[in-house]
Length: 594
Image (cartoon, rainbow, N blue to C red; front, side, top):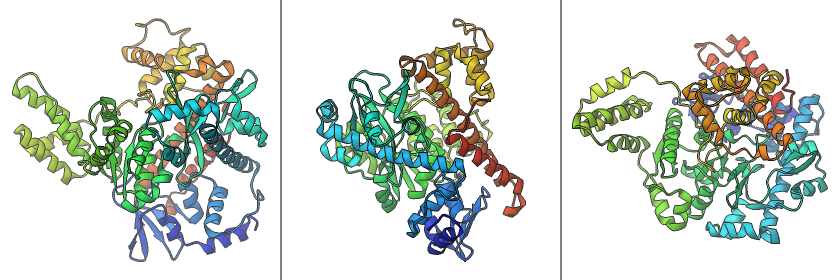
């Protein structure tokens, strides 16, 4: 059947919007409609409604709404054709090829389909090398030393990327399966070096990433020895966006939906070990700090999330940040406190039963955070210790969204410190809202990848002569960087003849430059073409981040437009749709030069 009006109506007639939305959102009957938490913005009280009679949906919070296809477009981050294909798959309707698509949409679809096919081939190639080839022996030994067993290798489809003599084993394999240079580069499976393509990953254990529907979308590579970086993930592609993925979700989804509970970890080997230990609801962030999009993904499936991060200071900082995001989304959160110096992967090998006990017995997150804030204060008089404890606990209390629960913890603090809970709550209310914490762009190796701003600035700090060229070629301005210190550093890099020795910049900018100088940048060792491609990737990602932030602002403006009908804000809706087209064009390879 063609993709024209007949096909659209055939698909629409076979599907019930309530069933489709219900596969993503937990819906409850509310009179003649169904109600749930909106999957497109963070909220604690449901404002998202589905009308089965009209086969339409609408959110009174963010003012988004539409039909079956609009819902699938937004929830699957695709265009109308992608939404139609997903709906047709659910309805059992066959569609014809590319008829009705404009050239950009057709090319976008072709590249996405090619990337999915090539990722599947690559996953099988890496897996076969690890299991059956002599060159995979080093990978098998490495995994055995980490306690990874044959069942883990099969369950997660682990593989090994060989180095070979030319570094292009996978490229040649995929070329034999009809892949062209543009397809290989777009899929993130290859890089261009000295006018030829080479494998993006080599001499690394490979961990494939799947989206929640089981499609291979990217890869993580773990170095075997002291090579840097220790962990290397697929760069952003049409399929792979770390901010929207949870590693292991495809395997854990059924168990999470059944238990309405998930365990969130940091690294992918943490998840491998957790599943081996019998924790089938374990997932992890994909080499990045927890994002709002990942929280919304979890909230669709789980009412409660147990954070199980490393027992060191960095792991606990990441846990506190995660608690804030989850609580703001209305997700019950618990913290599994690991012994200092251990991580879930260690514990899954040395004491799997102990890891399960920690997860199952995890206390409420704010109980842990409040006790931690109160418990580690020493030195000085008793009054001084109480004052320091109060200063530390006030931000924790301020982060609790429910007033009633905040009161309970204020009582707990008051009993511990001999203070009036009402005065503690008054201090919380008077406490000024601090400026946003600077994002940890370059975190512990293997656990959190650097952000786009940090990556681009690190490259420009290493090659300062590139900074004015990047500014002029791509019209990058300081305001494109979300952090004020990053803006100042970019201005210094582009406006001065050179960035001089320490002391010529402000203290914060000097610290930032020193931090960036410690980041491992393999592109600098791979030639000018690899460096240029890395800069292009960063600029594209920076542009996309800016557009995505603007999209969030537009949705907030729609939500703040008051209790208007959806049709009362056509200008904002049109602006949002135009922005979506810009984002789609940029993701499909639109030129970035001005």
